[in-house]
Length: 217
Image (cartoon, rainbow, N blue to C red; front, side, top):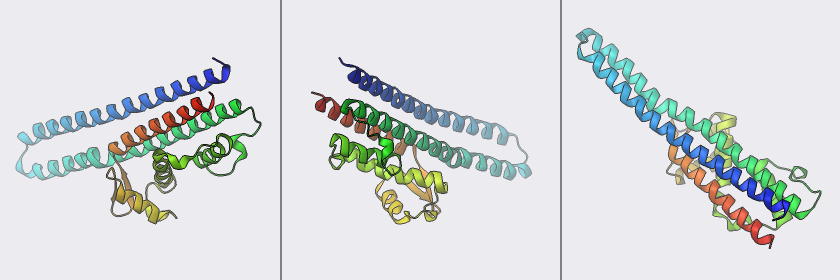
C-alpha cells in the first residue's frame, strides 16, 4: 500500500471515530435528560406532599419553570451547540479529504485556492480536481440544507427572520420532521435531526471514499 492510500485510510478511520463519538455523546445527553426529569418529578412529589395550601401554588409555578427548562430550553441549547460541532466535523473532514486528493493528483492546486465558504469550496475543488459529480449524492443535498440551518444558528441564534435565506429555511423546516419553529421565528433542533445529520455525514464520506478507491485503481 502506497503512502497516499495509507493517509486515506487513516483519515477515513479518524472520521469514523469522530462520528462514533458524536453518536455516544448525543445518546448520553438523551439519557441524562430522562434522569433529570425523573429526579425533578420525585422532588416535586416530595415537596408538595406535606406543603401547606398557601405554598402549593408557589411550588407548582416553580416546578413548572424547571420542567420547561429541562424539556424545552436546555435541550435546544445543547442541540444547537452539538449541531455547530457536527458542522465543524463535516467541514474539517472535507478539507482533509481535499488534501488527500491533492496528494494523489500530485498537484499544487489546493482547496484554499478556491472561493466560497467551507463545504461549497470543497465541492468546487473536488468537482474540478477529481471529477466528482455531487449531483449524484442525495447526502450532499442534505449538507447544503444543513449548511443553511447551521448558518442561521451561528449568525442569528436560530432566528430565521434575521437571515437573507428566510424562505429557503422555511422550506427546509417544513419538509424536515425533526426541525420545527418556536414562535414562528426560532429553529428548534431535535435530537432526531442530529442523529439524521450523523447518518448523512457518514453516508456522504462512504460515497466519497468509495470514489477515491475506485479512482486509485
